[in-house]
Length: 275
Image 1 (cartoon, helix red, strand yellow):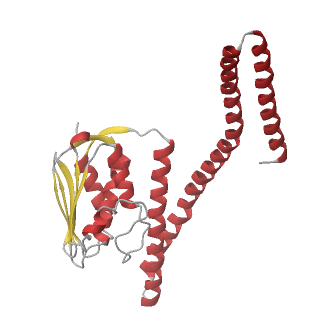
Image 2 (image 1 turned 90 degrees about the horizontal axis):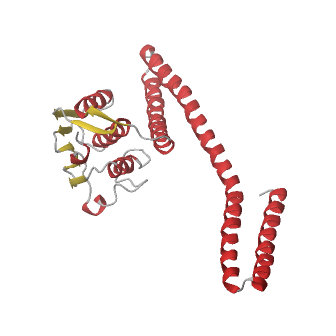
């Protein structure tokens, strides 16, 4: 707080205190103790609100500046990131040297990690500062769209789907984020040549994999922010926390069955979002 602001705050505090004391003294001599108490309470509330508004105004202003900086930085981050990824793809098509190709792969991998961070930040900001738009859509179409996005990164993992037409009313962007995170985890923590099975009906949406599984003692912690079951894959440990937050906000219950070394099955109960 600057000196001028400190002086204003002290002045306002002294003015408030002296006004309450003087007014109380006058009312005490004229009307009695009951009216003194009533007037003192009213004055304290009024001046309390004034002091609070003064104290919080700078905090609110700082928060607005930080919010603008974050949104502007996030927007600008997308431009160079897209440029890097596009140029890596173009160079890779013309390159035959194995060492250089490995370097390009590392750049591509790092860019994908930045892109994932960008998507998470973008989703959180939009969820916090904008009113969520609930819309009716076919969840089957959304799942199929998200699965297509993973075709290039699933490697030797086989993705099997058994999907029915299920219409839900929810935040479509948020639901896409849920699917992306569950599918991404099922691929990352899978075994070589493993599978991911996605099942959708009017009761639930299920993701089942043949991955490394989760220890029973860790299942209760996997939705904690920044918690990671394994350090085999790089990440930020916030994907499942995003899933849990979305499901809680939309009344979707989550059940998990997992066995270490066998795989994991995560089911989302859709009853509360069905149309």
